[in-house]
Image (cartoon, rainbow, N blue to C red; front, side, top):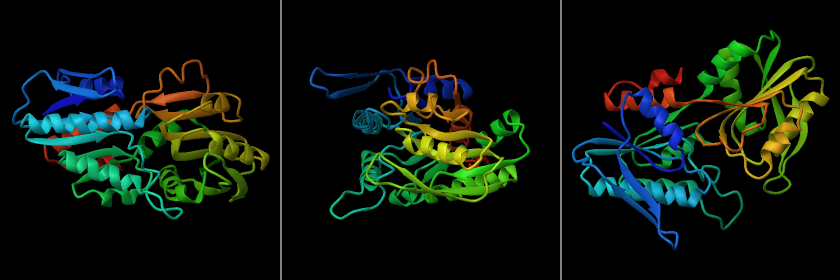
Length: 310
């Protein structure tokens, strides 16, 4: 087994390698003057099982293309099998046709990764679970819920907690966390007047006097989460904590979070945000390297990965 890192999240790749007591494959990935990406492997990987670690985060198109080129380079270098480890699967929000005459980008990206030569995919908290069915190769969709649950039990001492789904689509995720914590569930009824904007219409469930924990897979511009937190406080919530797997944090998202009623935002390091979160006192980053490293180890040893879902 060998690990190859793309350029989208080098710190996470190094942490995974450290967990596995392994070294990253020596490679050269750079851009030509016109923006074309060049990938070169500087060591022999013939006959090895290779895990390429690359998030499809901003700049999404460059990082996706780099992932495909790395897979192609591995294929042409006679790797025994190739596993694409994609901590953040970009384009996952475009998993269906919401309006006529649009592309289903998640399906296209799945096809590209498969056709490039990947034999397996490992990812974390897909935006929609059915994306696993877009692939014709095995997909391991890991969950950050157990990591969040451990953090909550250690750091939030309140006995009156309720898990919050920021929209109807996130109900199952919030229910899963609530089941581990043995607490109730509430749902924020949200509307989107247009892309990138959200409007809270109602809160379904009792939140007055309670410590609310909003859980979701992605925080992008921050508008949905900030509005949901404000709505909960207006309805009598005592405190609002937010747990998100993928911190996209585009635009002035960090500024919105810092100026919001959110007591603490916890994200994982599936996306490298060290520059964005610097100085934000109510933003905390949890490492997901042990979860991903353990999944890689079990796949390499042909043992069960399902225990990691508990």
